[in-house]
Image (tube, rainbow, N blue to C red; front, side, top):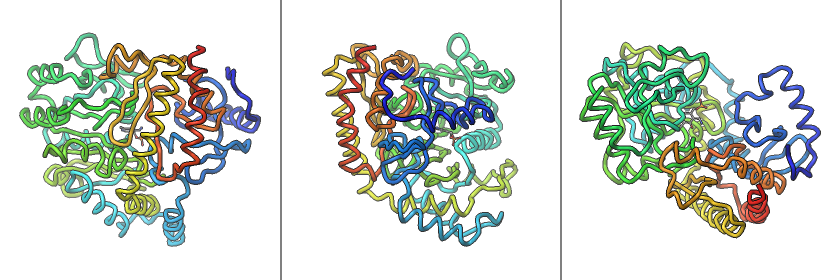
Length: 441
Ligand code: PMP
């Protein structure tokens, strides 16, 4: 229930009712349903810049940004114009086009990859990267970390079995044991666990996949040197290092998470997955990497992979226009707005006596409702200590004061270059009220 609700929600509630009759849970992706925070999900009618407008006419500062993609804010005029021009030329041909070449060149220019292949979702990107890693190495085992989300790929919807270094069990009904039987799940930031599985299973390991910096259990930055250690361990054992930058790519920094560690430390992943920002708000994603590995893909090599709408001209135009507009100034702006909001969140939560930990990587950050006396949040077990009841109260108090946070305590708060002083001030004004609401739980 929504104790603080004072804004009209009748139109959203009516749509939700209709939606539930024809769609499981009324939504097309689970977290949108507000199950974690309670209440009526807001149906959004339109968005511009940093603001969302719902079907009841309420306006909100958007701190979800479509779960990452909207780096420039909503309805950016130059992206809109480029998309409109592309639509006027037809929407899909099923042939190669110029925008996909230009977008691939832009990605190769910014990220540690020599060749890329476009797909339509982050899920497809990680699924394909794993198939390619298995095809390239001729091995079958995949290593992942608990709390890292790589989309709803069967073999990656895995929970750790009992004890470390044992093969995983399915994390959801519908995934057969045979799909996760070749997946090893380890605690994040745990070098000893990584060393142990490579000693035990090294010759069978096709790849280790990790979020470049986890953002799907809240933001849990890799400890200094952790990604370098993973890359080196994989290299030693002849496995591929797959860095999932679907969320961090072109968002944590101009060069993604890799711009914050690999580019500085001088190493490169073997394969990288991308999504979100590179699609400019359209369904586009990609995987890329070493030329010799990517050359194993069909039609150059034997590993099959394909897609009717892959490299779609509208999506690639939107992504290309977005990346070209994503200048150093854009990242500096998002960074500054984030610093202001982080500081205000710390101040408000401290004043209200709400235990919290704020963590960031580049421009990405999140607020954990956990006891700071227990230290930094290093892995999924730490993240699981989050007080989701306090977060639910905080979330609704923010929503009531026109700030739309992710409806889950385990998500990054996303900003855009359109988050100007008015939008940031709206967030700052709401924070003390929300902190008191969290304290009252
Ligand atoms: N990898 C990461 C790191 C993600 O954050 C996500 C989505 N949140 C995915 C993969 C899956 O992407 P999609 O939802 O486009 O399938």
